[in-house]
Image (cartoon, rainbow, N blue to C red):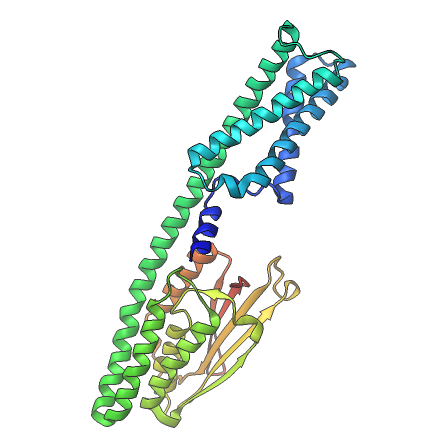
Amino acid sequence: MSQDKDTNKENQFFLPDFCQVESVFIIILTGEILAIIFTLLQVKPTDAMWETLGLYSISVQIISLVSVTTLCWLRPWLGKFSDAIAGALSLIIILLTTLIFSLAAIDWYWLASIDLSNIAQRHLLIRNLIIAGLIGGVALRYLYLQQQYHRQLQMESAARLEALQARIRPHFLFNSMNVIASLTRIDPEKAEMAIQDLSDLFRATLESNDGLVSFAQELENGERYLSIEKLRLGERLKVVKDIDSATLNVMIPPLTVQPILENAVYHGIQMLPDGGEVFIRSSVLNNKQTNNTQTTVQIEISNPISAEKYHKGHGIALKNIEQRLSVVYQGKALLRTEESDSIYRVILSIPLKLE
């Protein structure tokens, strides 16, 4: 439990992971832009400009890369402090790196002994520290505000997701209780079994603390629901599954599969005198199949429908699922429906996000 809290705190830390290739590339690019700006402010376009640009490039790149390398190494330690203290310590690291580099430049580039009473040396140190302090302070402030913005978006998304899930739970409970009510008059023993299944199903749904469950758990909950309906419909309801084991760890919002199965039974199977099969299939689609840079999981649920007695409904459950997927996966997940040859299909395409 303590390890989970530490990991969560580290993920919310405002300093990014500077050890990543993307971060290093951005630092190098930003440093080179700063070197060009310093050069243009320092000299006019002459032959000396290239020499000055080279000096500024080397100086800025060394200071920035050593600073971010140190911050990368100390990030787990800095993450234990408050944002204000961590920011102050980070700025001190940048200033110390600048100071050490400036002293080294006096010794190795100027070939002079370090003497802080020397006006030129003192001017160099003060100028470099002020520039590094201003740039470092602005950069750290930007990273902090960016993290606060992302944290606010996550909180808003979590609240919206919880509201959407709270809206679908009463609908599910109401329909399930109708099933049990009908069974109490026909077969009390089956009604008791249905209540037990419903209790297990609802408990599993409410136990989700992070807002997501694995497809394996959601599939198990869906099977519990189908077992309730099978007590009512008997042999009219058949379930066929073709599940790729590689898809079982994909993370999805709870009550994603069950409402689709509920629609398949309510709008499809029970409208047919002889019933039919609810077919559940899952597979992993690679980039070539999806024309996307990210591997996706496809979950398909299909059922037969009666053209004469087809009860289409209002599509509230599907719209709810589509909205929740949009919140969780930020538009990268897709829900679509198809109807052909008296077969109705609901297809979910979800990024492969493992536990």
